[in-house]
Amino acid sequence: MAGANIVTLTQANFPAEVAKSTLPVLVDFWAEWCGPCKMIAPVLEELASEFEGRVKIGKVNIDEHQALAVEYGIRAIPTLLVFKDGQVAEQIVGMRSKKDLKASLDRVAV
Image (cartoon, rainbow, N blue to C red; front, side):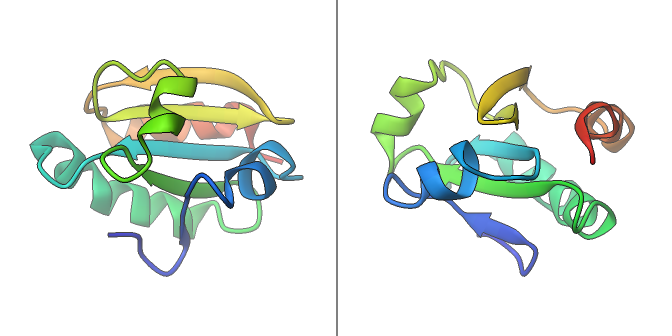
């Protein structure tokens, strides 16, 4: 369910794509059965294009990668974590407007 500018994150590639990323990374924890997750997906696609080269956007399917969800204390979806320098800089739980998400990314964008 990830588009061209969005990285599909797994247990295997998470350290390289997120923890060691030189760019800030917005990680969307989602599931196939989650309505709000499907609603936010096109917004993330737009933001991935707008912030290309400044912020990386990735998605973790919590049904396929439960260990990552547990590791980051994901209790509700969608949950978006904004990582900067490998650390969680911000947590956003639930559906948010593009304007709100853009403001979060503007705070960490390089």
